[in-house]
Amino acid sequence: MGLKAFKSHMKGGKHQRDIAAASHSGSRFPKDNDVRKKWEVALRREGFTASASSVHCSQHFKQDDFDRTGQIVRLKDGVIPSVFSFPVHLQRDHGYALPASPTALKTRLNEALARVESLEREKKNAMAREKRAKITVNNLLGDLKKNNLINEELKEKLEFYSGLQSNCNGHRTDQLENHKMRVSLAAQTLSRSVSVGLRTMRDLGYSQFKDCEATAEFTEVLDVSTWYLSVLGFVINIDTFMRMIPELLQVQRYVLTYRFSQDHLELLFNSIRASGGWNNNPSARQFQAIFRRLMVRCGVSPGETGNVAAQDSTV
Image 1 (cartoon, rainbow, N blue to C red):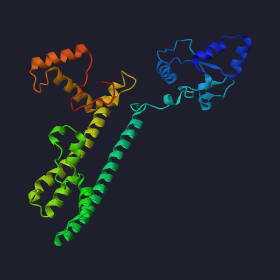
Image 2 (cartoon, helix red, strand yellow):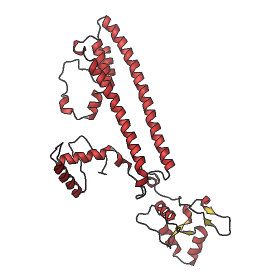
Image 3 (tube, helix red, strand yellow):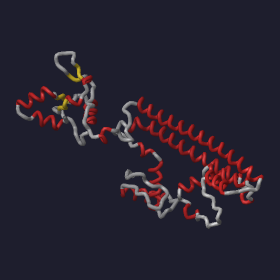
Image 4 (cartoon, one colour):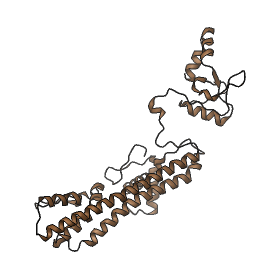
């Protein structure tokens, strides 16, 4: 029973008041401002502010929240209403919701770091499995090379371990210049499996791949570096967030953690470039005019042709 329903229930006749008193009693909001604020937040009523005469139904408190040692049953000091019949989507916390205590916040950070370590171990194991597969394929190719044999089975194994489909029929390949901003194609082209394919073709004796060792090594280094930098950026974001959260929570009730990522900064730079005619090096006067225009417009709108896309409408 909510506050509004409780008030309307208590406004009936004497018989109704007696029934209400027997079933659900009312508790006044605490005089302490901090505790009263917590009660208001727990109610989840938009725009509601408790007054000195506001009453809350005792049905929304646990049995352990009451002090029954004396003749009068009263609430214990500092308790907060926690029993509600909210819809399921309101009972779950948002992804950006933060624990109330620094200890719980640190626990969540430790869980995130443990998840990062777990992913690192999984990647290390995957690389070990890939290395063993590479040795197996190289041994197989060595046997076929001695006998000057190459068949469909070998071609299928090459396609399986290379990550890119081989073009054995001489058809015209895709024009990669038209897809240079496709992140998925870049990740596939610069993956470790590509270096495995390059070295395999070199070991088979193809003259086009005899000097590919530098390219294969560069692809491996770039693949590992890209993964490392992505994890490092996540850790830096978490560290920055932990340093700023004490001051931010003093002036607001919650913090949008997604705003601490690099996406919003990239969207801002994208809008500045678009406002300046896609000028990558604006002068100080041009930057001042562009930034003033963005402030007047009160928003940053991502372009449709850029390489940064907004995940939601919180720009």
